[in-house]
Image (tube, rainbow, N blue to C red):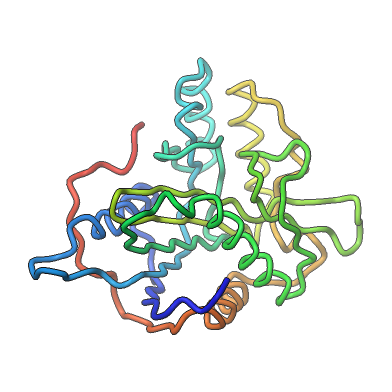
Length: 259
């Protein structure tokens, strides 16, 4: 990834709730379509980082399965809000031991580099995790939840045969821009494993529960704050970061989720 210019950084201090956080991401993307009142006024590229409330984000295919209602109820019993994201893939879980990273940019031809973005951001997050001691690799692992060619997984320092998916990514585009979203599971992996086990069992989707977990289960002593700082350090090598105190003004009548 080469130098890419200025990038605003919004470090969200508190969650807006599971649905509110996902709606904000899509509303920020919507700003690229309706930039402002002045001719030629275009929003700056934006990086948003936050710790989410416990959430299980289902894919749209999940919603059509007979066991979806039971899966959603299992999530609620575990203290996770079930939501349906407007993207592909299968169910993924995250919570306050995770870091969510939304990168939004205006782009007149957002489709052109769709696949290249998956690779570039996967490599960026792999680098950030390696910087804090994770033996991070780019690519899927057999039986992983929400299978993706550009997942980032980590290898245990004490058991090289154990691999845990740490980063899931998703992308959404409009004619005017794109949103690339990543979630990094840093702490408290057992809770993630438990809620996904119940959800996938209800959906009758085969997977290997040992692929779910957190970076701290790889023999590392890490915090979300340390991973966030490492992500920003890597970003600084490619962008000129400008931290902003609050989210840019947004307006969107488009619902973020279907539940």
